[in-house]
Amino acid sequence: MINYFYMLAITTLFALSQPNIKLQVLGSGGPESGDKRASSSYLIWVDGKSKVLIDFGGGASLRFEEVNAKIEDLDVILLTHLHVDHTADIPVLLKSSFFTRASGNLHIYGPSNNDFMPSTQEFIERLFEDNHGAWHYLGDHLDCKARLQLKTHTIKDTRTVKSIYTQGNLHISAISVHHGPIPAIAYRVQIGNKSITFSGDMNGDYHTLEKLAAGTDILVAHNAVPKGASGVASKLHMTPNIIGQIAKQSKTKMLILSHRMLRTLGKEAESKREIKKYYKGNIKFANDKSYYMLK
Ligand SMILES: [Zn+2]
Image (cartoon, rainbow, N blue to C red; front, side, top):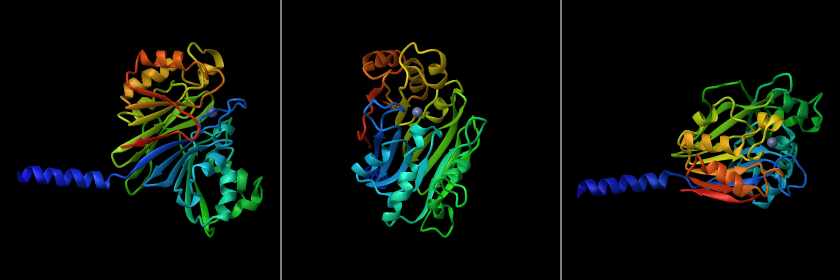
């Protein structure tokens, strides 16, 4: 009997200490106009606060506003890579913070450089740096005396899971993924005993996402190309077949398909059929502002 009450108390305490987590899609589209979606962006709410942003492509700032997210509550922005459809609204967010009480450090993480892309540090400096930045009037945000300071962290290429950020029960880890010639990172956000993993744009060639996503509660995978895609498209993006194999290998509990493009929109049944050849779990197609609770 004592044992029973002891276990009940422990279980109740554990449930109380596990925060309320919500994944919300801000942008479920890609770079095209015509998909009628904001470009890639996701928000993680923890106990009703908008804490972690993953990518912030064109249109995401409007969705951020529509779902009543607050810049004041944001701790971290994770950039999977620096293509326009994943980063274009960053200046919008930073400027709009002026009209809020946002203060302290806002951490921003992203990949390192190569011949095709600047490092995340360089990218942010080219946008905002005091002397040379395109929007150097926002350069104060890079200064340690700023009310809201943007703290940029560049992640070096890594083929093993690397822990990048910890605050309380929030842990973020990262791994490099293959997105053609573009440096790209996938992230896993762990809060207490729950986790969400974001593939970003990638084609699966590095075989790294399955390691990062092992046992994850939700895997957000980008459904940018249809079954049978080849050539450049398949060097940049996962076919449904690859998504299915990774979801299976990682034993993800739920799969959300996003970054939906004109070439995959309308082919949901076919994509799902391909994925189901490998993955038997729950599959959802993302829409702007749709959300998923983690219980
Ligand atoms: Zn993209």
